Amino acid sequence: MSSVKIALALLAPLAACIHTTTDDVPHAVAASGNHVVVAASADTTTTGGFGCGGGLAPTGPAVVFVSDDDGASFARVEPDDDRALVKIVAHGGQFLGLTHGDFGAAVLASTDGRTWTEVVPADTARGSAHDLVATRDGIYLPYATGYLSSSDGVTWTDHAASTGWYNPVMTATRGALVVGTGNGALDVSRDGAAWSQLDMPELSWVSQVAPLGDDVLVTAETNTNVIARVDLATRAIVQTITGVGPVLVTPAGILDHGTGRLAPVTGSGIGAFADHAPAFADGAVDGNRLALLTPDNLTNPSAWSVVVSNDGGATFARAVTLPAVSSHD
Image (cartoon, rainbow, N blue to C red; front, side, top):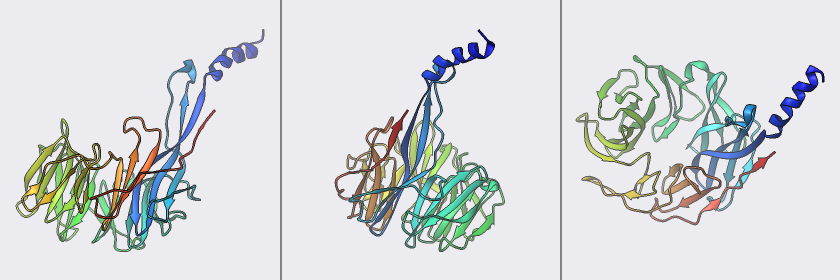
């Protein structure tokens, strides 16, 4: 038998046990008016291969699920720009999404969730960017050496930071910009140029910052998830709750992603968490409208739904299953 035939004979059983599965995997949700958009990607997993071992699950091309009827139904769309969105927000009647590629992070914009246009070109200098946030004050994209800001999602300004940021997350509240970092610190600026740092060694990894009245709500990871209410005026942590986070700040209170439990917020602080909504992977707030992206299983989801509230999160409508596609060969 020739060496070629021997090689083919050896490869045949290996090829026979290689299987690929492509699944729509949702990442994020945003809401604006009666529109709800879910950003996803068609990810391919390969099972088998050399020795019929494990496989890979790279992020695939973009998929979005779009609702024009307040989350009552969704259409599956494959945008012309196939870069998958890993974070999506709504601001001023439009949607903006953060995407990553070989040439760094970029921002895409859409008025309907179906057609997307690049508004911030890809740049390797922003390869570390993983947070995109929209507040009343504007839109912000922090990265390792600065941040981008925009008031309308069209014109963007690049601001250099005096010190580097590790895995930064950002928000704006009460005239202050707040950046949380992966080394357990908050950087605060009143003018976007001069920054002062609040060291919080008890919060080793800040993964989320959000406005909470006059304070800032910080989600961090230590030995367990923890949320902390930080008073910017006194530059101090005034309340911590362990075993919670990440969270969604809503008009009804604070919703915990992993459990769907809700805690009221009063003048005296954050109250006790109690069962309220389904567990969710991501959530969006647009005034009194909430949209939660809910998997059937947080650990190994096989189906995804969206639940909507029109009363600030007090009550939720029935879950609507996304028309996700799964293929096998």
